[in-house]
Figure (cartoon, helix red, strand yellow):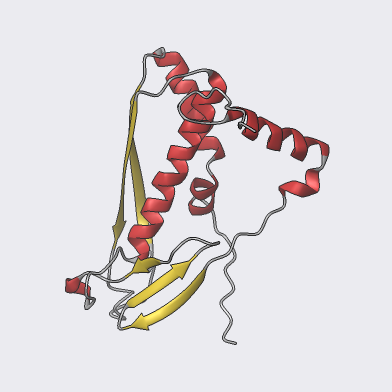
Length: 173
């Protein structure tokens, strides 16, 4: 039996997304989800994260931070997570709005002072500022693109996580 192919815009199956939204409206408890990652140390500053049933994702520090540069470091992965989350938001919301995306590039960078990480002073070991620059190629009007941008930035889970204090409990088992 042949599979039914759903027409999509921007390579997004918006019917599947709409179906989930409807299910959550009907059954609000379905929206409460838990996401997981398991990290295994591989020696030195190398580790690998396993998420769901995907292959592992490497992490390492660059040479100048004492690593062997075999993968992006954790702070680079945070920047990548933000950019990837925004890309999902643009694709989903543009599709819902009937906007065709011809091209999308998101450049994310963050300012980080290494003093605290290296134990040279107390303070913030994390980013002091993160910027994301979105290059969106579309034939949509400037007003529609601004509305899309506002929707994406106001609904990004990773953006929301980074923009507020989130309790983090780290326990030694």
